Length: 193
Image 1 (cartoon, rainbow, N blue to C red):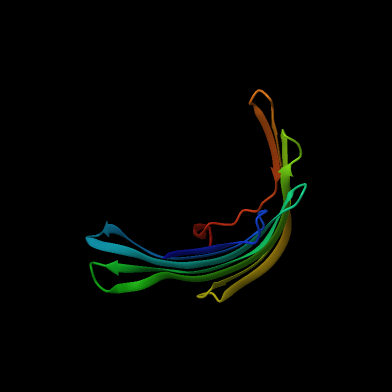
Image 2 (cartoon, helix red, strand yellow):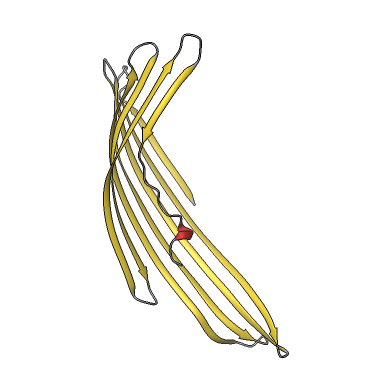
């Protein structure tokens, strides 16, 4: 399931605008595999069943304010992630009922991220354009591996600067340079299990 809703409020004729965006994503996936080995006329089967359910909700509010020398853009956002996954591994001998549960792993993960940003951009002259920005992001994560009663939580906050400059030459060529810092988040497959 994927839902997106947005609305733009145009505040005046010079370009002031307030934008609100909401996204919701819900995915449920299952996996199943069987491994068969034969030894001494006995078939040994190992099955692996997994289920991964995650939901992501995000809100974003942006405000654009054109000024005489540049345009100011500012905003805030929130993203919440809820991931619940489990894996069961069982052994069977000669098509009988499960002889033993080899392993089980249930893992719940939650991540909440709030951010605020401000940027200034515009043409310095007919050929030179620049954008300068700063974003603050705060993230809180919680993980729970149910079978071992292992819990983990942490939080962190960082500032991320951005600078973009471009120059248009009179012959049609252009030169651009940018600098930014960001942070990478793990993929769901990198998280336990």
